[in-house]
Length: 412
Image 1 (cartoon, rainbow, N blue to C red):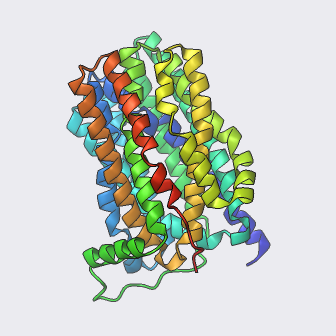
Image 2: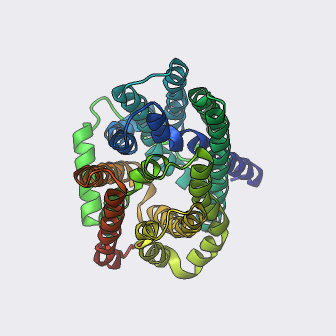
């Protein structure tokens, strides 16, 4: 592989991460807040943070067959990111109109997540063959670091725009602005993806290709009988426990505590900044401990995070909590990403990641739904939110036996 060509591909991948992350920061993360600005309640915000993820996981089941039909991971990934960019258009229109129903928001968010998740397994396989194995830990640590800076920059910029809009009676217009920027950033990301080469093209599927349900069953069996099955089980269990409380931090701050968008931005942006600053060190730590060792560090560290919200509602205290949370979640997420590259052969990666995404999304929705039921049953007041946070940490504690069972054999 020519070094110059590899360097260009890696640069384009890093730039794609930056543009994509700005989209996440100023677009995706503010969708639940947009629902609250339109007059919808905390349960609706929780639904928007979870149900579209399940819809996306179901739609992305077509990815292995679509890639096989097209004979290209790159082409499918670029098509999906194009659709994801366009999914912000109705959000901009509804912000200008000043009204949207919950079902309209769920539909737009579902298109967003479906396009993003459908492209994810193809990208995972594509980039796994593009980045040399010796470079993966350092490259993805640096790439993820820049991505977190991008999320931080997008989130801060979005918060400042919303704060300005709220102060001048133009809150919904401000949402229209940040969603427009998000769409533009994803369009730039798509162009960068399209500029990268594809080193190993998948074989095109014959007319009598294996049906989608059979492909999914095969992928599930592959996970179940392999050591990576323990990793998937643990990741889904932790996702359930984390999303038991995760979708309700936004309504807790904006509705229950009455935070301004400026204060909300400061608290939430602290986590993104911490992730960006911690990733280089975590990459070096992962090189010493190995991916499984890093997973143990991150998995144990995230257990008490939700209960730390019980101590105080002071903005500066919560910023400190989010700084700690960012470091903990960065360790977990980097370890999980590296383990999928290490444990799953690239020929099986698209199908296995697709099945994994479905399980993860189901756990996410189940966790958010269970947390929402508890929140509603307890009266949706401060005590109810605190109950949700405590149960979330207890559920995370219960995942320790699953974490201890994670032992990954290297992929062939």
